[in-house]
Image 1 (cartoon, helix red, strand yellow):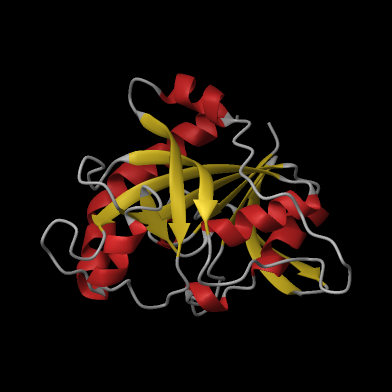
Image 2: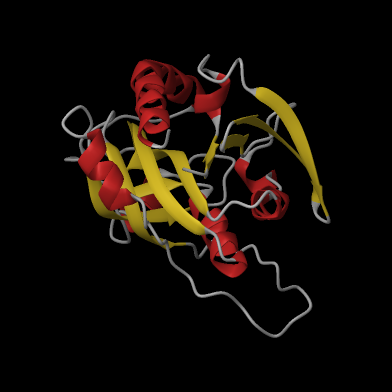
Length: 232
């Protein structure tokens, strides 16, 4: 099945894609590097060189490149922080909606008085929930709250955000908006790497965050391996 994967640090830290062919695609918004094998491509949203922080990612080039390559189905894996004590680190969720108020939407319609319909298609998620079980349990229907970054949220901000959604991140809403505008079906998978700042009585910083991501890497590698089997 022809599927494009979009991820971030999980790609950099995984050796699953080391043999995939490195390619690039040039769009009106910039050139995008990706890796390909058969009917699948995987794109690092942060770029292939020095990784760009979330607020500086060229989202329009990334999504335009996938559309130009002929993809209609996109499966995204995002690292998120939990806004719920019962959503523990290591949990895999799928978000069906999102809040993005701090940073305005990315759009392809700079010169037209129009916009896309917001939302996440998740057309492949029911099948993935079935086929990845019982090894992986995916909790569906969660709400993603997007913040601008690059810093983590303050404890006071988290007290507000936990009333808005289930997990917090910095990238998925922009990708979902652009996919909707251009006719790509966006599918959300997210792994919870940490509790949001102060939620469990602990502060979060980038050193702790990187350690937590590293702790989940084995699970992420196995999840990607199973996804490739399902879409083979």
